[in-house]
Image 1 (cartoon, rainbow, N blue to C red):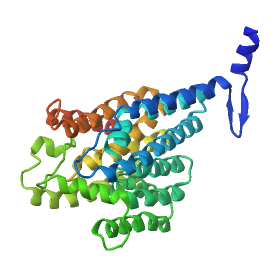
Image 2: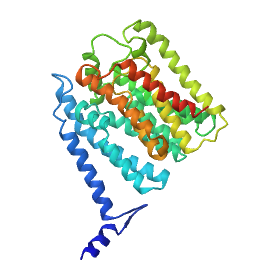
Image 3: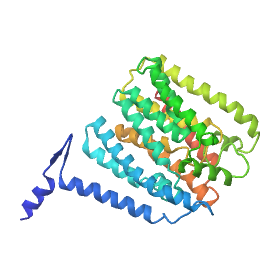
Image 4: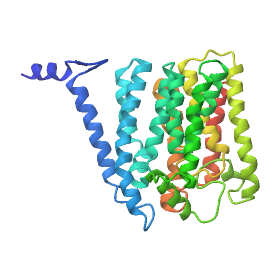
Length: 345
């Protein structure tokens, strides 16, 4: 009897391109239940007074996309590595990732939606479908301008003739649509945009960084805000172009691993120097770093450090103060960025 049960639990059943045993299915379901329990313990938190209805509406939507992100991560990791176990582990890590759980159950800003399309753009590009990846990136940018963090890599791919110029109409349309929605010119009220506007109103004075551990936490986030922000805007554009040009000029083969590393680097570098970043600006880098860690196990320290950095930023908002000096966290982030740059030199 015991032998029959064991054989049943490990007997694989073909589901399209996947072979899953009942034990695998139990693992996937059990991990999902654990993720639900984690979120249920903090879902009652309201990020701002008198604005709970908007955020509560988005929390369930965000948690659904947490699952979508986990499934997409499973498919991407399994597809690249050919290792089902790595895919299952990546799925579990995504569902239990602190920044995602807090983002959906505590913040309720709907960030998981734009991050899902950003990860989808990376996935398509790693599969050699960069033009479709740009279309997905356009949707990500439409929902949140942070999707632009990945654009320098696509510019580099264009310089290497890996994507078509026409495909850039998607992110351009996404950016235009985002600006029209944010400014209210388009008479469409998306909950994502409403939640972001409410959060911005609650900030008070303008700061170069809202708890995000970037360069302004080192030099001063409330000093020369207008002057620094104007200079930083053009510097970030030049930085993005420089990433694309150096990527195109490099003689290193553009393997999937290197391309993924460049996506992570871009998602970390741009918000590090961009002004007005907030606590959640590292979410694309967090998710892309998890993918990098499972594709290149020797780089698993990258997601570990990156997620801790982001969660310190989260806790600074929830607690009202940082558990450690933000300048120190920003310095650690810079070291991590330099480590990724070192691999490109």
